[in-house]
Structures are given as structure tokens and as C-alpha cells.
Image (cartoon, rainbow, N blue to C red):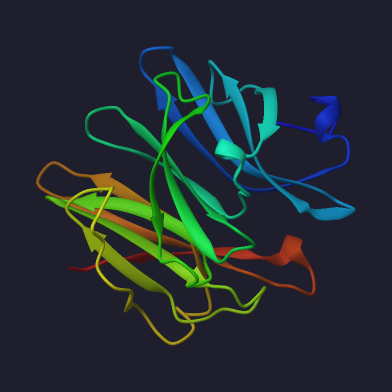
Length: 214
């Protein structure tokens, strides 16, 4: 979908945690990602790319800091009303910001909330079940897994609950990357997608899919 030759800004970039959602109004698939430069991990920027076809190359648009805030581990969430949200770790991973996107999903419209100040959370994933929103995230322990936690709220702007443990003390040796709703004929199942990192050889890292129960 993107290569180092797709845009001059990607020639020396490290791209992490890409996420894609579809905009029904613009008929575009929109990708947001964490952007760094290989020689400098202090860039802490978000980047955006688009494509009319999920199976064809994306057009890289730009990288930037949302509302001038640092942005690292990130995710996208599209709500029932079609509004889209971007969530990312900020302030050297001490905080996490949740933003509403513009109608075309290409920029940040406003900051909805700053979550869990000084809690050092990363790897966020958002879902909604019934009237409750849930955010799952990881503590910052580098490439080593830790106890994932979740919080819930009736509104994305809060108030949010405190952080509560989920899964094993190492989250089954994974780190959250996404929560996938699978809509069946009778019910919707929610699947936890976790990264199982291999820090000795990143290309050996795998994904773990686990069902969530409530």
C-alpha cells in the first residue's frame, strides 16, 4: 500500500501501527499511522494516506503533530453516526489524547479528551458495545508484554472509569493493536487482536486473535 518510494517523506521513515477506515462520503479508504524518522525517534508524528481501493496503492498526504501534540502509538475508531476519531499516546507517552476527525477523516477537528494523565499508556484500541465505549491499552514496557487494562464510558468525552485489568499478567504475551467487531445474523462478536512481538527479529512477530466476553 505504501513503500519508501511512494513519497520523499517516506524515504527514511519508520511507520508503525497503521489503521484504515472507510469514508462513505468521499469514497476513500483513509489510513492513519505513527510516523518517525529512523535516525530520530523524537519526531512523534501522525501521518495520513488515502486510496479509493483497499487493494491498490495509497497516496501519501503528509505527517504532522495533531494540534501540535506529540503522537505515537495510535488507533482509529468510527462511531455509529459516521464520525471518526483518532487516539494516540502523547507527551512522551505519559498521556493519551482522543481527537475527533474532520468529515473527510484527513485532519484533526478537535481534541475530545486527554485520558489517564501520567499513566504511561500506549497501544490503544477502542470499541463500543451497547451504550458503553471501551478503550483497551498497554503500559509502556518497550517490546516486553505487560498487564493490559481497559476503561469504559458512556461518552467518548468522558467521564471515563478507572483502569481495570484484563487477561493474564502479560495479556497472553501480547500487546493490544485492535478490537474487531464481527457482525453475525443474531449477535456481534468482538475479537481482540494482539501483537506478539519478537524484539530479536521484528519480522518474526505474530498476531494473536482472542474472543472478548462481557
